[in-house]
Image (cartoon, rainbow, N blue to C red; front, side):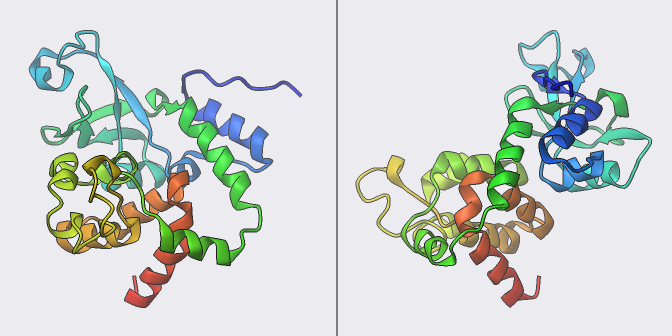
Length: 236
């Protein structure tokens, strides 16, 4: 059997073929999206939307992460419609209506995210002692960088600043682990379950997006049990 080598940005077909080889099960675009992978399309520089490109006068790879945009792809759309993306500086940008359209064959998935998914799938297949998970949940939180990686794309506010300011859901009376920032802000940690529920309540971030975050990031695994239990209690 020929071993498939992934390029830095893989097409949908390359991604599905590689994952099938790694997992022994068939993959589709819908399954890629259900597992939290972010598709990208290359945007050539357009002077009419210069704010998106900054100094990248040749263009850049733009992520597709808005739930409505990814749901359309998962449902089997004939093309790509992007209504919200991030600019070259990774700042969330609302695109002018009706959005940008691209062909399905232009979708790309990052090699590092595909490799990370395989690691997660293999780890999930292994039995995990619940007592260890509970201990991890009780003792630690996630760092600012991890909180940003998991949740910042879902918010229209400057999450980095909100975490530093530690007000509301981002502070000690919210999701921040009490006392974790006593010596330095760099040591601050947050409970991701409390943070995610607060984002849903205060900023109306859809539960479906938050669910994908807990499935997509390795560092959120210790809280998956607590997250699912919280959703069950809330009837969500």
